[in-house]
Length: 513
Image 1 (cartoon, rainbow, N blue to C red):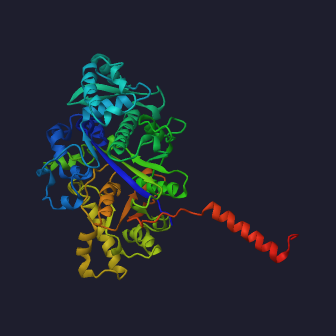
Image 2: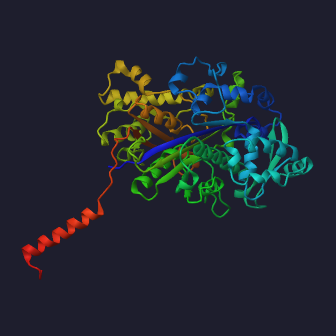
Image 3: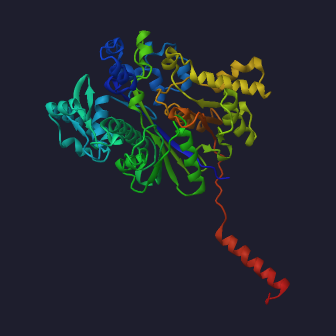
């Protein structure tokens, strides 16, 4: 069977201290309840510098300068360590500072909603023009136009018709509402959507920069973040995907948005695999930008414990999926796992549905998968908030499932967990940790022969939308390419076979038959 393949992956991070303080939901709710909150007063003292964020080991792992196995060997707490030879540029992507990202927000703004203060705009323009990735994005000349005066920006913000943009605690711009009465086009929603769009544009450009894929080769884009764009008549109508492709010069692409909370990336990967295997599209990109609302979600716990506010990173990713080339790691479309509506919500039921059942379908056992990538949240973020080590909990459940199925001895459980697991290294951006941060590492490990296969697991909390109490989960297996490309039927041979069959028929039954 001609399975589709993954040809490349890219990952982007944006450090966003001021966005955390002024737009993270934990902080905005706290400010509404108590503007003099002790948390808000202490928070600035727990913000990291850009250099500290770049040197943070999990962030280096995310952009490919460190493998998950190397991260495991770094003593915790990780925030007290710094990577030797740290760099904002990585094998799979890059970390950029907040001012450059703010400039990018204006570049991707199609409706002149972003206003930047003149001196700030001038300063950031120089950085972006000189940047090898950001400097080639369409419409960069917007940074030469329509700057704002500080008093004008302040008036828009004070009149509650624009969201403020801060950098180093200074008001440097704003995002205006797109409609006077439509709540779906309010300044708050437009701000969040432009953050998501800009970070996705950044990571798509990274994909082109880090891999052989060209913008004009992309035929379909699937965007799978947790934001929704639309208007009062269709609040989640979309389409982020085409708006992102437009900014990156994907003139031959169309696309659509896929949503399923944290599980959306796994759903999008399956959709892309199906499109590639069917031959409908040859080159598909699955991507997502970050979420400003989720910045600093657990910051209260971090501040209380004297730790840095770790959730200062917007995350983004882009994955290139295409037709079988006989080389790139394959997606086993005959082994896609799904949490069915009737699967049940207990941990055992969930793992059975999305791990055991797809393995049974293609004749594999638990230990036939070399690495499982499930909910790769950084435990240094989640543990202080009481959520524990989420990836480790998943690996233990997978191991326990192996014991229950008689595929693993109980005494070997911890050894198995250590073998097929890995530490979480992704920012807690909801959809970002769901398995996809490992894909870049997995491609390298499969191609170098370190592993044969991995399972990417996305899990989602559908009940958050208050439409159902159901849980969600999707998995897919990525493994070494068989090296064989099925060319399909040869048309000339088929025509010859038909002609021969007709001749034989005539000889037996006569020409008049």
